[in-house]
Amino acid sequence: MALLRAFSALAVLALSLPLAAQSPSYKDNPEFQKKWAEAGQVGKKSDPTFAIDFYWKAFKISNGECMECLTQIMHFGLIAGDHGQVRKAANLIEQSSAATPSEKVSAKVTRVLLMLRGRHKTETMTEALSTLQEAIALDSKNEKIFYLQGKVLAEMKRNDEAANAFREYLKLAPARDALRTRVAKFVDDPSLSLRNMAPPFALTTLDGKRFNLDAMDGRVVLIDFWATWCGPCNEELPHMKRLAAQFKDEPFVLLSVSWDSNEAAWKGFISKNEMTWSQFRDSTHQLSRVFGVDAIPHYFTIDSDGVLQAENVGSGSDIDGRIRRLVAKAKKDAAARHTSSEMTGQ
Image (tube, rainbow, N blue to C red; front, side, top):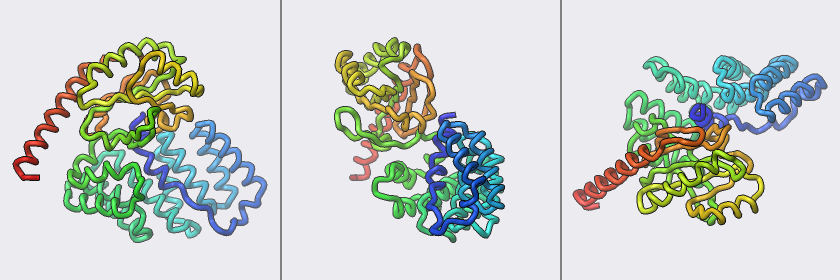
């Protein structure tokens, strides 16, 4: 579940579209305004299925002109995992004369995301590549299109072309884009883009240091979602302290992400319990939503390549052995890279 939500993050960004400069006439219709407002309220309550229903009703009232309705249906369809609704909305956008080029691009990108989620048959990937070429013709400056193009080409084992697509992404993406570090690795090894990568993120920890998952320099990462008021989390605290101490001088990073709303209580708990490793307070649950976390304690083990190796929920999780194996592999890989650099004189 978490991975599906994370995979749709790119589509969520792609669906953030500007409003039309001139308000269409249907927006003055009280019935439309009511359904649109109801859809928004339901969507804020994280009830995607009902939000989809209300947006369809608003679309019908607009006589098929409301492209924003269809965009929202794609958005909530991805969250709900209702691919049929997503495809239906995307197809209507692509066929509509009322849709802007950016809305058509969003629809094409979303359809390709669905293709990448399904079985990667040759004909499906060929269709995906063709769809992305159509999107590039509409907007050649949209970096997200080239990111997906790289993944599709890598899936087709056309690695040289995939590397070029990822290079194009790097040319177009903003300097602070969370994916930049990761995509730079994909340029060197496009096949890495096909693996089960953990969602990219960057944040500032309690001690003021910048934490970027894709800039961990070959270290294994354990993310621990918890809260001071969580009983099972408190039961796990001695375990977390042992892991932090055991792997202190190894290529390993422990990041604890708290659900606490009370900053003072959170800081006091950390100080009292000598939690000396990286700490972050996710009071808005923004990072938790990226990882699809809805219960704590919740752990994600990520290897030195950024690949998600395991997800564990609840106390008593036996993660020590897995971390030892991943740390040993990270050290072996680092030694191999060092030897290779010496041999090539780099």
